[in-house]
Amino acid sequence: MTSIFTAAQMTHLESIHVAAGKNTWTGLMDRAAIAVVDALRERFADGLPERAHVLCGPGNNGGDGYGIASSLHDLNLAVHLWHYGSADACSESARIMQGRWKKRGPVKPLASLEAGTVSPGDLVIDAVFGIGLNKPIADDLHGILMALPTDCHRVAVDILSGINADTGAYLGPGGRESPRPFHLTITFEGMKPGHVLGVGAVLSGSVQTVSIGLEEECATILKSGDLSLRLLNDAALPWQQHLFKNPLNHKYDHGHVLVLAGGGPTPSCGQGGAARLAAGAALRVGAGLVTLGAHHAALADHAVRRNALMLVPISNEDDLAAFLADDRINAVVAGPGFGRGRRTRTLVQKLLSLNRKAVLDADALTSFAGRPQELTGQLNGEIVLTPHEGEFRRIFPGYLEEADSRNGAVQSAAETSRATVVLKGQDTLIASPGRTASVAFPRNRMRSAWLATAGSGDVLAGLVGGFMARGADAHTAACMAVQIHHDAAAVFGPGLTADDLDGALAKAIADRCRM
Image (cartoon, rainbow, N blue to C red):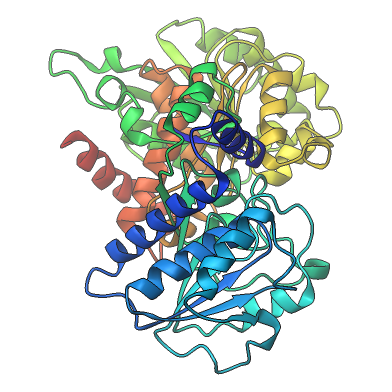
C-alpha cells in the first residue's frame, strides 16, 4: 500500500526537518524546484515547450514557483512569471526566492493575465496555493484557472490551487464549477488525500511524487502507523494465495458461496439479474461452487439463465439455517436484487446470527433505513458492507455530514459497525476496524468511469464473496475485489455494461495469473 500524507503531516515533516538544521526553507524550495523541473524534462522527453507561464502565490508554494521559473529560465525557456495579489505580500522565504527571480525577469500581476496571452502549446505551472489552502479561492483566480486554454500544458505544483488537500473538494467561490483537469500534478514525498478523493482526483490529472529529502521524517510517520489513508497497491495484495489455483486442489478446496436472491410469495419474473451478476462474479473469481438461493417460486426463472449456478429454495429463515448447516458453504452474499422490507431484514438478521462470512449490499442495507442499529448492532466477525453513498447515508446517518471527509466518515463507520466498509464511488474507499483505510486510484481513471452503470456494484459484491470463500479475510477480499473490478473496466473501457464485466473479468484474471 502506498502512503498518503495529510496537509498537517506534510507541514510538520517540513518544519521538523528545518528545525533540526538539515535544511532551510529556501533550501527546500530549491530542492522542490529542481525536482519539478527534472520531472518536467522527463515528461517532455523530446524537449520542453519554448514558453512557460509560472503562476506564483504569496506562500511557500509560490516560493517553489519562483525557483521553478528561475530553473526554466536557465534552460533558455521564455518564462513569464505572474504573481497573485501584491508581489510584496510574500512569506520571508518566498521573498528570497522572488529576489533571485528578479535578476532574470519581471514579476507581473496575475490579474493582468489577459485572454490570449497563453498560447497553444505553452507550459502553465500553477504554484499559487499549495496544500495549506482551507478557504475558497477568490473570483479572479477562479476565473483565470477557468480561462486557461485547452491546448496548453497545465501542471500543478504539489496540488492544484483551489483543491482542499485533505478532502479533494474544490474550494471555488460560491460553489462554482471547477476548472478543467490539469494534465499533471507534481507533489512532494507522498500523495495527499486531495489527489485521490473527490473532484481533486479528477482535476489533478496524473500525479507524480518526487523527493525533496524528507525520507527520514516520512519513515518516522510510516513506522508509527499514524496514517489516515493508503493508496490501494495491487502489488502488495496476495494474488498468488487467493486468485491462482493449485492444480492439486479440487472445487471444494476453493470455497462455496451462497448468493441470496429475491422473490417473495408472489415473485415477479425477470427481477433476479442482480443476484445472478453477483453469483457469476463469485464463480469467475474462482469460488469452487456457487449456489443461488431464492424463494421456491423464483427458481424456474433463475434456472434458465446460467447453467453453472446451483439452485436451492430458500423462502424463510428456517430454510437458510438448514442450508448453512453445511459448513463447506463459507461465504454468503446478500442484497443484490434481494427485495426490500421485512423479509429481507429477517433473513439478514438470521444470517448474521449464524456467524458466517458475509457480504451485505444494496437491498440488504436499504431495508434497514430508519432502523440502522438493527443491522450495525449485530455485525461481528468477517462482514463486508458495500454501500454506494446513498446506502451509506441510510445505515450510517449523519456520518458524512459530521466527518471532515469521506475518508473520515468511512473509517468511523467501520469502527462503529466492526465491519469492513467499502464506500463505492469514483474514489472507492475501503476501511476496516483498527486498520488504515485504502482508496482505489486506478491507473486508467477514464476507463474505470464506465463502472458507473447498473449492475456493476452487484458484480463487486460477488467478487468480494468469491475472494472470502477462497480464504481471504474481509479487508483483503474487499481490496482484491475492488482492484480486479477496476482491472476489468480497464480491459473493456468505453461502452462497458455489467453484462460485459464477466468476459472482461476473465481477461483481467488471466492477465493476473500470467504475472
